[in-house]
Every structure is written in structure tokens, then in C-alpha cells.
Length: 347
Ligand SMILES: *Cc1c(COP(=O)(O)O)cnc(C)c1O
Image 1 (cartoon, rainbow, N blue to C red):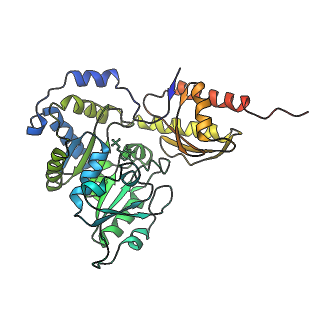
Image 2: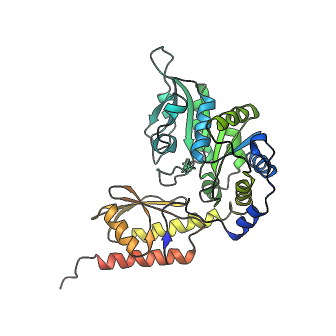
């Protein structure tokens, strides 16, 4: 058995999802004539109570379209320093939108009350113009941390009091919402634009959605085309996304519970120094006496794949391809590793 905890992008389409893809009605989406893409976009907009949605190849594209549409050259984007838009999108905001980043040092990737006001720059010719706030829920590099709607509301209120636009990188938003019980419409109401990944825990092979008002999404559609993201018979992919929204949201609670099982088991192991609080499907932990590279090599030999997240930090990510039995297997292998590497017993 090989258990893949590297990322929730490792999912394979389920038989039901493949069936939906095979039987999709398609057309040329650049001419807006793909009925399945149109249905996905209408469904997503309705789910978030927003006017419109745009189907894109990736979450990098939906985030960068939001930055493009909310800013002008020489503006700055305010975000937490662990944010995906800063860490993992190649710095492309500088290329596509000619903006800079103003980074906040928050907690587990989350911005705290007061920090946005403190970060906003006054209007001087020699300063970048603070224009957009991006927050991430759940925060990947923060270990899958959750913002509650109450926390987000306070931060967004602060941002709006400084005339900032607000974008939500909700790549894994539903991993949070299945825990808090909040309605996606509450989140749609709060933000100007929302990005959601279909290709993470929701299990679609490709795709992300950008939600916003009609004018903003029309503008994003123009930029999607010129950035090279206009797809033709994309309905085959949209069908997977529709299937995911209809069948794979509630089950994210299982992924979260499985990550917490892993976290609980890790705290019992002698070679684990610290396990971060595990709220959703991402579990980060630090090793005591070995590097992440060494540990992952030994773990790989036992049939478990995971990701280094620092010199002594490892990330486990659960997803719909990881069953309860596979979690049992991983825990068993971790316990074996601790026996095989424990110092010899004395006496
Ligand atoms: C995965 C992810 C994205 C988008 O990544 P793509 O690989 O471009 O689809 C954006 N934000 C967060 C927080 C993510 O985890």
C-alpha cells in the first residue's frame, strides 16, 4: 500500500465524477456556448449569493485575476506573510499587475484585529497606494487554520474603513465551513471577490472559480482570455467541478477528522517535538532529532508519502483518496518507525 499525504491535489476522479465528465454537454466556452461551464458558474455564484462566477484552470489564476481587477500599477496588496498569493504564486503579481505586497506578521497565517489599520499607508507620492486586502481561509502555510466569519467580518470592516477592496482566497474554504457550519453566502456577502479551488479536497482534476459582481467578473473574463486561460470545450472539466460541489462538500468533514486522528497519534510519538493545532485537513508537525528529509525518506520506505514544510517540519494532508484504513496504516507505520529508531533500552 502507498498512502499519499503529499497534498489534497493528489485526488483521482471518482467513478461518479468520471461518469459526469463523460456525459457532459459541451460547447465553445470562449463564445460562452458551453452549457456545462455556464451551469457550473451559475451554480457557484448562487452557492455564494454572488452575481457571477468564472471557471479558471487554477487557483493561481483566480487569485491573480482578482488582484488584476482590484488594483492599478503601483498599488500595494496587503496580506499575511504566509499567504499563497505571496508565497506560492511565483511573485507574478509584480509581472501581471505591477503591484507590491505589504506583508502582515499574523498568527498561523491569520491577520489579527488592528493589523490592517496599522499596515495601510498614508497617501504620499513616495508611498505605494494600499488598495486591496487578501485573506486566506483555510490558511495552508498556517496549518489549515480557520477564520470564523466573526473574525473575518472584523478584519474586512477595518479594511473597508480604509477604502480597501477585499478578496478571499478560499482555496479550501469548505474545509472550514464543514467545521463552523457557516453558510457560504455569509462569505460571499462579505468579500468583493472569492476564489475557490475545485482541484483540492473537492476532488476535481482541474479548476478553480472566481466569484464577484457582474462587472468584476466580466473584467476578469477579459483578462482570463489574454492571460491564456480561455478554454474551449471546458465542460468536461466543469462537469467534474459541478459533481464536486454536489457530492463532495459534506464529506470534507471526514478528511478533517482523519487529519485530527493523525495529529493525535503524532503527539504520542517520541520523535515528534510539536504538533500544530489541526483544525482541518492539514497537519503540521516538528521533529525532535532528525531532519524532515531523513524522516520522509524513512517514511517513504514504509509506504507513506508526505511533504517537507521546513528543515524539521512535515506536512500531512488528507483528502478523498485517503481512507480510514489508510490512516490506520499510517499510524501503524509511524509507530514502527519510532520503535526501529528508539535508543536501545537500558538495564
Ligand atoms: C492550491 C492553492 C491555491 C491555488 O493553487 P493552484 O495550484 O494554482 O490551483 C491558492 N490558494 C491556496 C491557499 C491554495 O492552497
